Image (cartoon, rainbow, N blue to C red):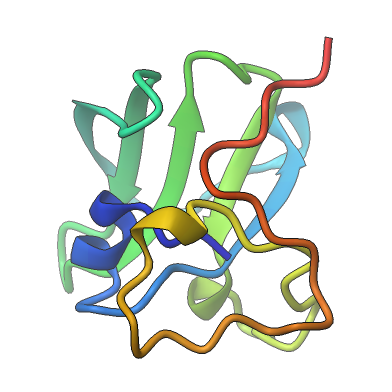
Length: 113
């Protein structure tokens, strides 16, 4: 789960719940439009969304080209997997519930070498 300010905007005020998959195993049917931006971490990001309804679908990070992040709510089964860590806790609002059973990180987790 990510609480960076950009994810809060994307989530309408909440953090986002994302599932990470190997990039070469992700395929989308239908059109995806992309928005490029710089994340709070300084990483160049591409975020994919449905041009018909505006639903956020994907995030691609320049620092992790081997991974595709999919918004959990965009899956047919959003219960597939739950959060395993909470990142950008330093940007979370005071009212945010941060699951005490998960590891917390104040900012972005560094990429695995």
